[in-house]
Length: 358
Image 1: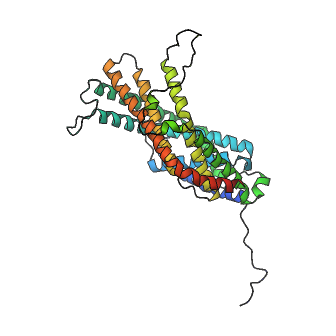
Image 2: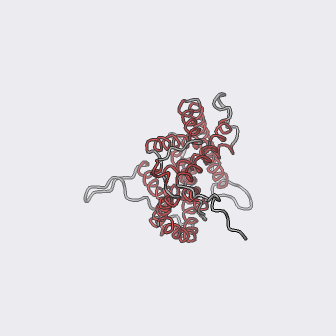
């Protein structure tokens, strides 16, 4: 056997810049492929729907991953460009997510109300035959349809805007030339690992701070009884001020916020591991459970708003109150499911955190 010639090419390890550029090039390409299909004829013909729901999902997926990479590995990019890109991607993400969000909320709420009002002889719902159920359903359907229409109109207007075209141009440039900072681009790929480790550590820290004692039981109902301290404290010796609807909404939003934050961090951790080519076992499942939590939280807020519609009947308001409680119990159920999954996922993240942060 002869030795290999000394002039044989030697494989060169990829740099951090090459790994980031490769990842963002793929995602920018996915963005550009999905954009025309997701938009369809909506930008030119009022009232037209997106040509492809799958393309809309692909577009949102690419937007999230590009934004996540720019956030986690911000030090590797030109600061001004990265910040502007994240701002524009966040704008598009919020714009695209509104109409499908209202659609999912309508399916969730109308399905829940229909189940609660079911008159099946095998097991009637607690609102079966209630006089307020049909009016509550009509009210929710009308308000959500109006919200969807407004979101669609806003989308149509923005699809014709120079802002969207500028973002598409930005993604076209990104597909061919990622604006990396020279020193960071030349570093070995291992330089990316501490940033990915920081994303995992942020998720672990957020998970440890969640109120696990309240998620110990499914449908525990604790969220229906504890809204936190009143926003306005009473004078010493006086009677506490009555809580207003705005206070209650703010207390519920504050109660949900740590869980919503955990979902954001779970997504960032997933995308950081994708960039590094490391496995993220369990993170997708955690994200799915926290998505259920957010959907139920948003649905409950929608019902609370509907219940404050002027001149609705007491029967309608009662039914809306039952639906609101049902959605808050779904929030509690999602927290319980997350608590059941977290102990199996968190220990698997500790190792990558230590390894990636070294």
